[in-house]
Image (tube, rainbow, N blue to C red):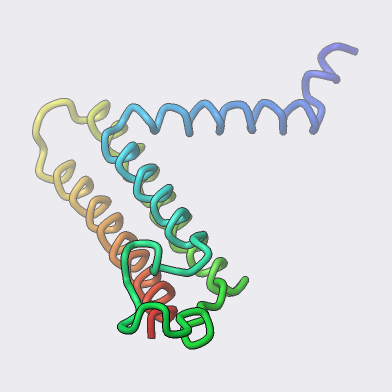
Length: 147
C-alpha cells in the first residue's frame, strides 16, 4: 500500500516542484543571476511607474502649464506586460540553461577541451541573443510611452 502511494501522481508532482524550486534557488549562487534579478526588479519598477518614465526626471517644457492635461501617460497595456514578462522569462530560462550546461560541462570535462569550450560559447551566445531581445522589447514598450 505504501509503495503505491509513493508512486502516486500528486506525490510525484510535489517532488518535481520541490526539485525545481531547489534548482531555481541554486541559480542564485551565480553572479550573473543576481545581476539578472536586479535588472528584472528594475524593469518591473520602471514599468509599474504610474507615469511611465517621467518619474526619472523628464519635465514639461513649460512647468505649471497644464502638464497633466497635455501629457497624460497611458498605463502599460496587458499586451505590453505580456511582452515584458515573456522577454524576461526567456532571458531567465536562457541564463538557467547556460548555468546548467556550464556546470555539467565542468563535471564531464574538468580539463580544457575545445568542444567543451564551444558548447559553453554557444550557450553564452544564446543568453546574449535572449538578453538583446529582452532589451529591445523593453525599449520598444517603454519608449512608446514617451513619444
